[in-house]
Image (cartoon, rainbow, N blue to C red; front, top):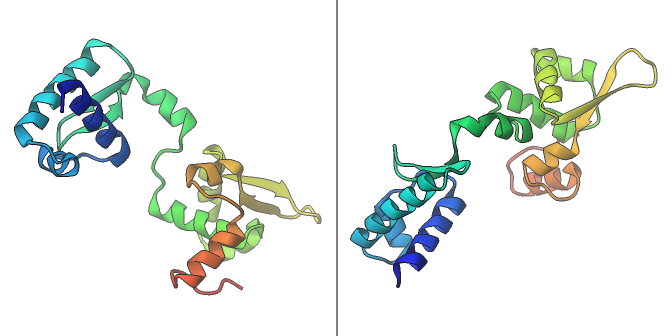
Amino acid sequence: MDKNTLKSRIEAVLFITARAVTTDEISNILDAEKEDIEEAMLELIMDYSSREGALEIDDEDGYIIQVKEDYIDIVELLCPVDLKPAVLRTLSVIALKEPIRQSDLKELRSNAYEHIQELLEKGLITRTKDKNGRSFNIKTSPKFAEYFKLKGDTASLVKVLEKEGKIKDTD
């Protein structure tokens, strides 16, 4: 296989895995000699650094394609950053029981108000006044479905998870 093809194939591996991978792993995936991988990887790193784009290949714990620090503000604007486990649990309750009244969510999750604010800021949920005006109804937003790569509604997700035994019936 020629050097340019090998570099392109390595680039595809780095893009798809979205985690740091070693030259041994890449060698196994591509069925190529480790020495050839190392040589092509070095050239690929040089290609990325010479074109001064927004992406780079980091080699701290293996190799990974990532956005350069100078462009992190764009990533944070377009993609929610890490959610703390407690916030993620609150989001899970919202997704499984939506629409849910904020007062009911507060009963289920004691720190719900803080979590709701964070989830609203990240655009993962929406909140509207309920008909009596005393509480809010909360549900997931289209950005939630997009971020978690869900197709269809969350009721379908609940059925899948129940079928797989990952959650108990939520009624």
